[in-house]
Image (cartoon, rainbow, N blue to C red; front, side, top):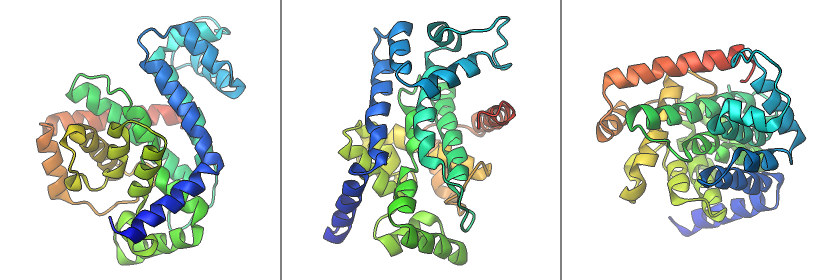
Length: 291
């Protein structure tokens, strides 16, 4: 990376560190750390959640929703955690913390933070499905990576709004994907920004690399994290194809998509099943007003 681009990324990281965006670093790190710890109990998770009254309220509302169908009202946080399960509670906690970044409603050239949030949740869900359906693995931090993969777009929108809107306009008028237009105007794109932030926050390389190469997995040099990168790329691409939320990359490299499927040994049959399940899940989330 040339000196100008490196300086630009350092400038952006500095802006993020001195802003409200940096608060999600500790929160998400604490949530992921608690869940990763095999000795974590429902009480440990309860102690973490009770620090956040809005999250407590959302957790109890979710536990008492028609989706779970429990015959009696659940009013205890620890019982709600047991009923929903650790994974569902982790995802709810991550959503609660991350969604504040996507709160603004301004629409420009088809972009809004809300539509980006819908896309991000869908990518998180799809990433989780790919890990579990294809590899029979838990996927560790795949949900969090999916949720935060477009953090760089939020950063551009917040700190470089004029240039960001120029990139949106250029992308629309020239029919090119946003990350290509960003590079011409800002020197760097949102994937590189997201990766730089994750590295600065000392998140694992599996997370930072996946975010950094989620549009260009073919440029990845570190093969140790290839699976994480390919899964995020595919999840992002699937959600773009299915038109779920904001699409920053509507122009697809079909050969690259097929190459990634081949590398992960994902057949058309498996892919179709995942797409069908994702569509049903997103529809259910919308019906329950969770999205």
